[in-house]
Image 1 (spheres, rainbow, N blue to C red):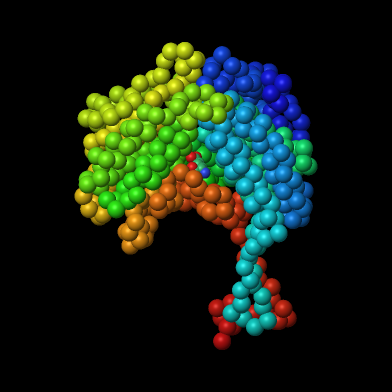
Image 2 (image 1 turned 180 degrees about the vertical axis):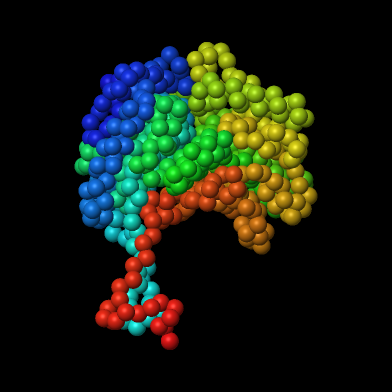
Length: 497
Ligand code: UN1
């Protein structure tokens, strides 16, 4: 697709221009001189067309046998695998994260596609005895209809796939609004779906802003479920907008994830993990490690090792295989990171390394910032509490295990946490007592796999999970079915003697 810089919306099996005829540019955050593509600046009219197509297509797609839907998804997975390298290169160009990571992102989309293809031959319900004679009970899943997706820029293909594949295998149809910073990766996924035989109208993509595309999508009463990944601030608005017509909504939002380092930890491993957790994806993951808490006896050592590692990271254009950290996604995100660094300093955090925008040479063309570490961060500081979504790590210390757990839970969010320890008792106790949706032992806070539920507690989510079979609960409703083969009129609770 890179030979054609103009990309269109995908509605009812066709690539179409926006009704307004307006477009916007998608530029490489590592080099803003480089145009990745021109995309449609859509509005409510385009959304209406896409939802209409999805509503029509739903009528037959929901009746198409699920194993057959699975066969198409399997082929989608195969084709994506064949295009993995090109899709990864294009993702690095539009999003900035390094090639190893964009390959991982595309792989995550492939994993989800294969996983859900297999679900085509399961989509299991239950059978259970009746309290009455000669009566049979079972539960079946039924799809909801048109699903609207508002997807983020940090996992440009993986997260759209997390939503699309479980929705499609269940017999729903979808309209995707990609993040304005990363529409190309969604276009690549949609194109493959089309090429492998997903029928017209089953998958649609409308590019444009949250206000012009996202809002009308949420407001459209034919859309029965909204799945959103993004900030808690926007997620709250999405939730409120879904409430009046009881639209289901699945929200995956912020994180302030903690890594705990006990005094018995393998420090080399812990530092390696925290470096990847904090600075991988330039800290722009909702699972990123943004708080590192260390037992006082090892804190100085850990800080010294962390600083050394942070300073050795090679930063630049992620297309260069030797680069270890790319840019921030855009000017706004860079400004936010720099603003928080100032707040951290003002609030009394001790800046150990980093803190500056990178300038000079090719750095001037991108949104690069140094990996930044603050120590002596207290629980009152804003850099301890607020999600930054950048390469800024706050380090604090504790004396006892109980104190570590209290500090870990001292956050409005609840996505991911990790503990480094050699003590199995502490590992299990922390697993039980840290209030998050994801928990890791001797591994970083990032790195979820597609066959386990993904999501968080408190202000990270609204009780739903993505991935695994948990995702099927978002895109289906249960129907309880009772079959009475007694030939008599039996009354539940009354005739069950
Ligand atoms: C996100 O940060 O929005 O566990 C998703 C991970 C990835 C997914 C992150 N597999 O870090």
